[in-house]
Amino acid sequence: MLPESYIETYLAETVDIAARLDRSAIARAIEILRELAGGAGRLFILGVGGSAANASHAVNDFRKIAGVESYCPTDNVAELTAWTNDVGWDVAFEAWLKTSRIGRDDVLLVFSVGGGSANASMNLVRAMQLAKTSGSRIVAVVSRDGGFAVKLADACILVPVVAQERITPHAEGWQGIIWHLLVNAVAAQDREGNENAAH
Image 1 (cartoon, rainbow, N blue to C red):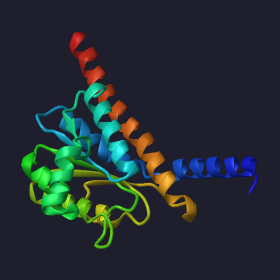
Image 2 (image 1 turned 45 degrees about the vertical axis):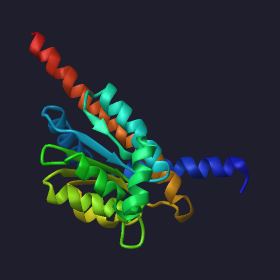
Image 3 (image 1 turned 120 degrees about the vertical axis):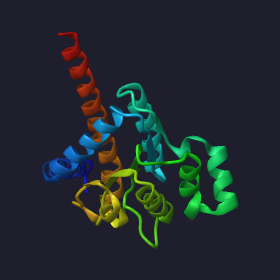
Image 4 (image 1 turned 60 degrees about the vertical axis):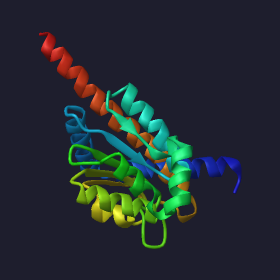
């Protein structure tokens, strides 16, 4: 495929994804995060691989732009590798969340290409299961068939599969678009509240 053709194909797929995204799932995620911002809870963000880098970037944005107390375990390589070495990769996120005393006031945000399964990203599955038993709400941005995230999340934003060979780049690229949308929706509410209080 010529570069020009590839560019057009990729961008056309991106437009297709934008048209097919479930707006109601995004709206539910915004509602959950706005409630979190108005309370005393914390936002914990999980991801593996490219999604881990997205989680770190999202922590910055939620803290700085939206004023939400946020954390992700992959930002502390010493602790993460200690948990991985001592208890295993499958339970590393779960152990980290237990130490953080995740509870009903908190929200877990999961970035994942597949959403976790018995065969892949069991660390995300166990973290989501712990969040559920702790009374925390879960927001997920995933692709493929959504995996366990579709079953466990209170708001699951599914990035549609438009090309099998480009599932991962589209999934991880759209994580960025969606979290920026969520951050700015929460920040916009805060600005509106301050403006109303000033009148």
